[in-house]
Length: 114
Length: 146
Image (tube, rainbow over all chains, first blue to last red; front, side):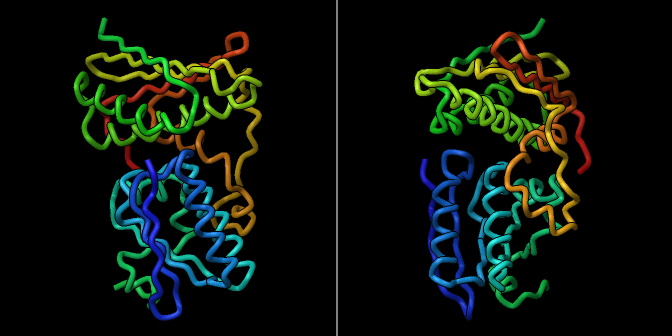
């Protein structure tokens, strides 16, 4: 099972829309895509997880790694996540306080929660 | 005594989605776990199976190894055991992560799986037997607050 990974630009942000299930089988492709964006000097990243039906701790590890790298280069990673099932994983691990979680891509790009 | 179902699955990442789908179906078919608890089971089993694959990967013939997943369906709980022969494991040896509010927390990209399993289950047990490890996850119908 492969992940859907689609990148578009919105204002000064690269928006990566992910679809599918993220686990140890599929997380490497997410990691590779995010790090290739950083290598292209796209350091303002929005990761849209609204079409992700499942994610595990491997996915969180990838996102933590990318957040650390982006911040070290003066960038930022914002997460769009409204599905309770996915959001709960951030909440249980308390990573909802390490990431900025938003309800839509528009909100994430603006940096404001409505 | 309730129903038992046992799966013997190749220890490879491409089988992980299949395992969680089957265990989810088993719990939906044979237990009274409410939907949020089945979501918890799906994630906990994924973490346990991923750890088992990691353990088996340390062996020279890793591609040919299997992981055994046993499901036990009782009226008031579901227990899933995930067994690998990957050489044993000491959960007590894990280094606790710094608090998420500390910048040092971002140094840890791995090691989230076992804390997650602890949060998701009503009972989590690791048994080391010879060269193998069995992780037992027990989930009741009781909804946990997060």
